[in-house]
Amino acid sequence: MKIFSAEQLKQIDEETIATEPISSIDLMERAAMACTKRIMKLIHMEDELIIFCGKGNNGGDGLAITRLLLERGFICHAYIVNYTDKFSADAETNYNKLKAVYTTSYSEINSLADLKEKITSKKYIVIDALLGTGLNKPIDGLLKEVVTFINANFIRTISIDVPSGLFIDKSCNGNENIVCSTLTLTFQFPKLAFLFPENKKYVPEFEVLDIGISFETISKHSTNYYYTTKQDVSSFLKPRNKFSHKGDYGHALLLAGSKGKSGAAIISSKACLRSGAGLLTLHSNKSTVDALLNHLPEAMSIEDSNSDYITEIDKPEKYDAIGFGPGIGTEEETQTVLKKICQYYTGKLIIDADGLNILSENKTWLDFLPPETILTPHPKEFERLVGKQDNDFEKIKALKQFCLKYFCIVVLKGAHSAIAFPDGTVFFNSSGNPGLAKGGSGDGLTGIILGLLARGYSAPKAALIGTFVHGYAADLCLKKKSMESLLISDVIEELPEAFKKLEE
Image: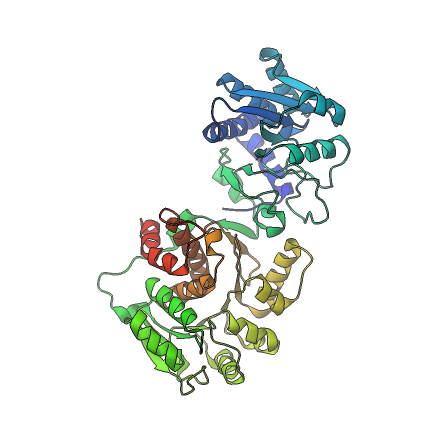
């Protein structure tokens, strides 16, 4: 699913109206109906709603939603905020439609005192339809007062298309005059700002509503940003050949674990084999190798000559894919092993955890990474690699530059993990939940991607599939377990079901 800028969204709307047999007011009605149908599933007939409407097209959506809800017997009242004298043409049309039939179901707000006089209860569910995606400067005046009033007085706010006051193409750091929605119902495409942690209090949840923009219109517009969906990932999967054997699905080498950190290696090993690798060899210290036999007899192992940590590697060229880092430590001899891999191995490589910490202390080694090496940092590990940025938009810019410079793939982990490629494209992941915010989750992701690399997927597809299926398996876990109790072991046990559903 593509992610577009505000200017592109405007162009797409204009092209839809120009090329399809639909007027702008009918397109607004279509969008309002999509919102109304969703809102009706989120509320009860006895709930009371107030709809804050601006005077632009977002306000027009709100006025149409008010009328459609009233037609269906819901209790709602529109408040039109007069921050300007003029309606947009389509907003005025919907104002007149509402006024013609429901003469007592709307009021006008001209001042903060007016607002406080008319709304004296905090029991309402709020629909925010003040401002849309075209905003390019912080709001002030009456709009600012209304937004402050909404945030201070109501628990549940549903924003239409975008929380009013939020920029979708640039950072809002330092600007807090933004509606804190509990849910945003956005049209056709996710918005880039929705995917960044800095906007978590404005967009904690969002849903994309299809308003019927044609595939032909969407395909004409290019973008560097995408949102990975279940349908996308399902289309990437390759079926197994009935005449295949284990050798057809690759041999993975995992260098992981050290004294006191055997768990990371075991987690990663299990995830690797659960993700399709034909063979797996774990190279680790003695205690980790001993633990492997008890936990995963399907894996092979190499015991390092050092009983505490990894100091050597033998014939890396014979493996189809190598994973390095989970629980491995940063001893000098371990660092030398990674240096040798970077310099001499030419196959598929994924580096995580302490492997990333080693690279951050030896940045010249980045120049030796095999093409399309996958790095899987969490935000602090990424900061060690590239430095600190002022906001999430700057962070994504730095991420793209890093991947271009070193011709690598980076999975920047988070609520919507960003998977960036050397060609400048960035895919944001749509699966997963906060139950993954526990130790071991990253080790599981490394194992999943390693298994996919060994199994024969290209590095870009392994990164996309692995990140999605990791989160998807965690989502499936919530049918049986709470987020609080979720462990990465539970997620790995759910991988077979996740792959099965994707294959179907």
